Amino acid sequence: MISNNINSITMTYSGTGRRKKSIARVRLIPGSGKLVINGLPGESYLQFSPNYLRISCAPLTLLGLNKEYDIYVKTEGGGLTGQADAIRLGLARALCTINPDNRTTLKSEGLLSRDSRIKERKKYGLRKARKAPQYSKR
Image (cartoon, rainbow, N blue to C red; front, side, top):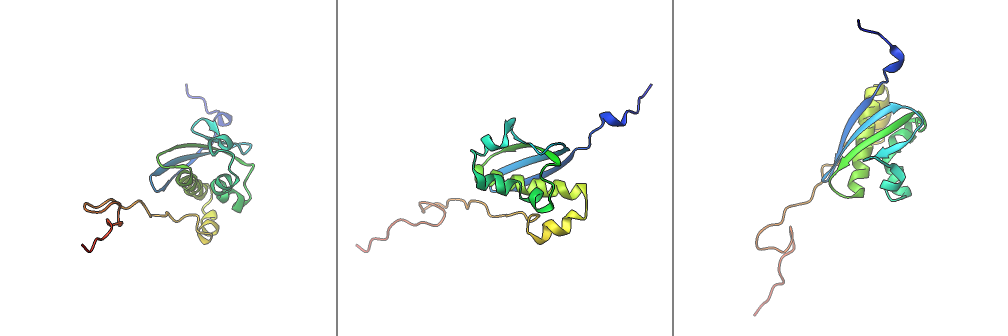
């Protein structure tokens, strides 16, 4: 026998964000507004940096949904800047799945565009991607 208990089903919304070498898988669950990144509280994972916290939660702040959803994030690769931007993109994409009307607001603020800039590869004969050895006339 299959029971149809509506109260036990919680809606989860997900989105994936990428930036540089970072990938963030974001899940939104209706709740009290806590941020959990890789099993740690968001504030401690982002080293209590107000800038990283502001960047990560920008889509929620813009829509006024700060205390309505719990955010669970699995992130890997890159540094904190790339991870914070990846979380922002994943969160914006998840909010679009909740309500398609959110898309116009987020798109006008540029929160749905993926920043495709990545590190350029090193070329042979050069010290870095573009830095050449010092030129010697004699």
